[in-house]
Image (cartoon, rainbow, N blue to C red; front, side):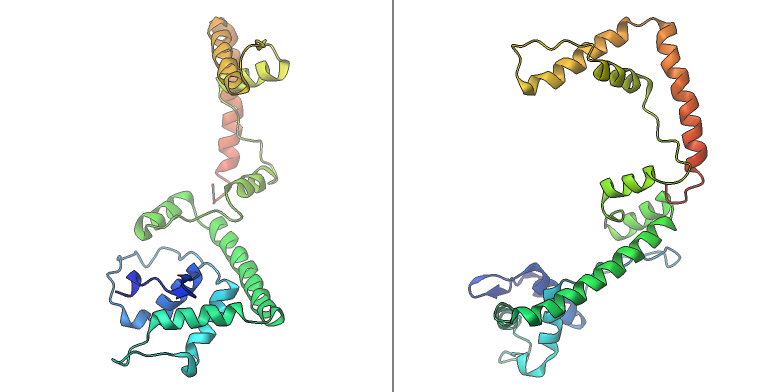
Length: 231
C-alpha cells in the first residue's frame, strides 16, 4: 500500500526524492518479490542521492519527526509533508551543505560508473539489464560517451557505409540543387531522394570503389574495437 501513497507538501505533490526516501526508510515493512539475479554478474553502482534525499533521511531518522497514526505505524503522508515544509524553510547555508555532499557523491558515482562500464562487455551489460529490467546508461550519457570513444588512442573511426559515404560527398559538394519553392521541412527529404537517384545512376564499378573503401576501413575498425573491452 505504501507505493500507492503520494506524499504531499502543503497540498502539492512531494518531490520524487521524498517518495524514494520513504520507500527506503520503510523498506523493512514491505514484502516484495525480487528477481533472482546471477550472483556472478557485476553490480552496477547505485545512483547518488539528491541533496533533498540526504536531508530527508536525516529528518525521518529523528524520533521527534516520526509521526505515527493510531495504530502506531508511521504516518507517511504527515511525515512527507513535514519534511517538505522543513526543507522549504531551511536556510540556504544549511541547504548548501547537503548540496555539496550530494555533488561529492555524484562525482564518486560517475567515477565508479565509468570504471564499471569500461570493465564490462556489452554482452554482460545486456545480461544485467535483462535480469534487473533496468537500463544501464553510459557515463555522461550516450553523446558524451561516444565522444570519449572517438578520442581514444588508435581509434580509426567507425566507417560510414558505402551509400552514406557517397551521400556525405554529395552533401559536402552541394551537388543537389534545391528548388526555391520547397519549405525547409521538405529540403531534407528532397536531398535524400535526389541522392538516392544519383547513387542508382552510378556504375557497378563506381559503387564497388565505395564498397572496397568501406570494407578496408571496417576491418581496421573491428580490429581496434576488439581491444576495447567496453565496446
